[in-house]
Length: 200
Length: 159
Image (cartoon, each protein chain N blue to C red):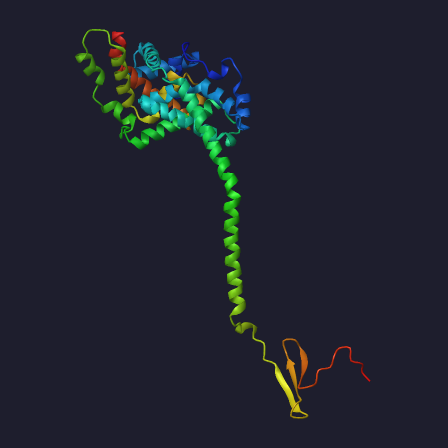
């Protein structure tokens, strides 16, 4: 997709490897540069998965602190970019599991049987342009309808523009699983948000 | 390539030409219309447009760095305290070991029983002087004990 966000590693400034090496040697300032570089993206990912701004801020903090504490064990098998996304995604998924607000029925089973929220929404939505807050609420509702795992995959793909192998690494599953989750999540979301798109 | 991967690569516009025929049949089988691609792309754009901007980005960084520094300071404090704590633990261990060893030294040890010294002979030359010959098996030695003799200085010249 042409509008995909770029990999932050390709942006200017010191490269991640040298910052990481310095941070591994105890350089807090170097780690601070990495935090500055990734904080908004990590926050966006966590928020998009858990749909709670306040908690997203705290979880982002925890993700970076967890990364700092684990710097010694990071051997550079993957990039810092995918590593920190993995930590953040796990933090968000763990939070959701603790909250137990995930759908209990596997998503694949709900596709065929769930009532069509698109049709309901289209009938009740007044003919006017939606406010940003309303759109946010509709997106929240649509994403909450997905399991945390489906949510994580679509967020990493559509919001972060990650490659399939990067998503697989960040979520800790195979590329085939990523494809499968993404297929259902894309189909479901585009159906649920049809009326929102139509009114924009 | 399975139908799910084919679908995703079609959305991403990375589907090889040779897969297009298979895609069309898969789309028809699953009742997916040709406009779905645009719909999915527009949905992705909608998601990206409505991610709230991160608030308090500067305090976010400062708070992380503060937490790292305070944890690091706490670790340093703990590591400097650790030898004192360790020496106390080692002292306790040493005392306990000594107590156990002392206890075993003091109690009778039947498994290391040494027969008592054996008196071989006792005789008395006079009322004042007596002699006892004793064998001590633990030292493998004979001891002759004389009692009642006058004191003889060490520098007394033997004549």
